[in-house]
Each structure stands twice: as structure tokens, then as C-alpha cells.
Image 1 (cartoon, rainbow, N blue to C red):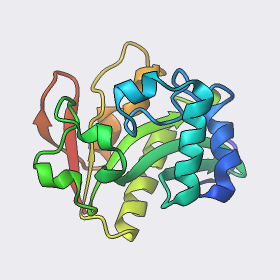
Image 2: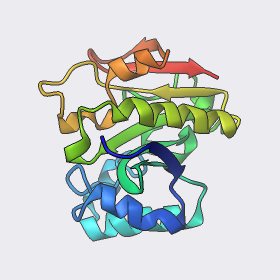
Image 3: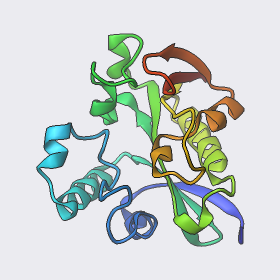
Length: 193
């Protein structure tokens, strides 16, 4: 990796850096990191450009929806981190990421690390660990009490697009503990801050 790593909140003035990380099609099949922000029916009804516009509006009004990771001045990664309430589909009763207690979905001190995206040429170099460390630090500064994740335990390839939820291994390294298992290979993990 070239350059010093740093992470910065995604604010309106960093939108072009988010675009650079997401690429021209919005990463992960044109998601633009709306998978957990919109219901499946809402997502299906939007074209890629509309998903991009939705996320742009969200970033414009704030607070930051996550962090952009940089190597030097080059944007190379993204982690969506913030209160569970900001990613309503992550809280759906039908998802493996649903909260342990229903009230956690609205508790602004209960946060979620719901998505990662690393530019393809930088994958497999440990950036997800750095992005997660930055997300935890960001949550602490914002007075989060709990931060949760629902990573994937295994993938067929170390650079699989299915890793958008993060690898269980990186959360274990950051001292998250499993608090529920609703589907094999997709534990709900928690770090008390």
C-alpha cells in the first residue's frame, strides 16, 4: 500500500471521494450503499442513477453516513457506520441483522457497521481492519454505547463481493463478540463501548 492510511467522515464536500470509491456503477451491482437504507421493493423500483441521487441527498443533509478511507490523498475504501435507525432495513424483523431488543432499532446510542467497500486493487491488504478500527473510533467519539455488525463467516474467495458486510474474522480481531446466530455463517456481533 502506498501512502498513510486515514479515514474521514463522508460529508457533502467529500462526495466526489465517495463516487471514486463506488466507481461509475455504484459498487455492488449499483447499490450506492442503499441496501440497508431502503426496503427491497424501494430498491427494485430505483434505477442506479436514482440510488446514487438518494445517497447523495442523504449525505447532503448529514450526519455522516460512514467513513471514507484514504491512502495518502487517494480514496480507497468505505464503511457505513452510524445509528441503527439510519439503516432501517438492517432492523427488519426478517433480517439476520435485526436487533436483539426491538427498542435498539431506535436507540441512537446503538450503532451498526453494516457495509464495507474497498476498491478492487486494494483488497486483501488489511484495509477492512483499518476501516473497522476507524469506525469504532468514530462511534466512540459520537457517544455510541454499542456497535453491532452481522458479518459473513466464510466466502469462497477472499475478494468476494459478499464481503460487503465484512468478515467475521475482522470483527473478532476488533474484539466484537457473537450475541446471536439466526442463520449459519451470519452471526450478529457486538462491541460494548
